[in-house]
Length: 166
Image (tube, rainbow, N blue to C red; front, side, top):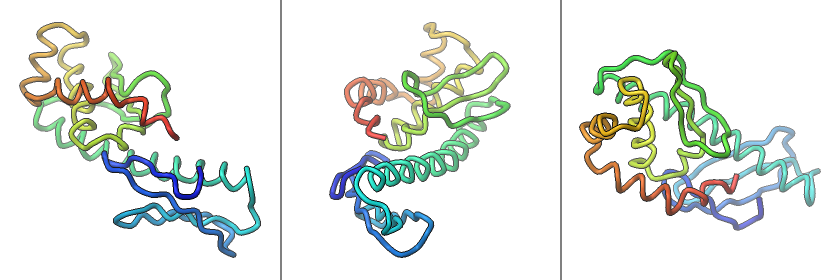
């Protein structure tokens, strides 16, 4: 993670600033226009970059867990479905998945996408609790709760790889 680099968060680009300080534990402070990553001033070069990346990734995972679980709870009540567990993962090929046991998995990187795109992924997986396939009935179910889902699906196709900077 290089000084001055930007990263997507909720669909917006934010500057990332690395700040060396005498403290032992790393901290991330997100302000309106940037991520300030405070790291031990004894780190340098590759170790500094690696630690910054690790800290930012962990911060994103924690935020994703909060926000995705909250949105899934809200949409679950609207859709009328119940799930067992939600896990936030670091997956390479999927934005989300739903098991036959009612467990939902989400890629933490969906937090970096615009809110509507994240909501589409959550609705998509919740609708699998009613239709465990990608049939016409499934897509009708998704459209019932998110009529403009195709816009968000297209955004993922066009921009999804930009979410893999972490």
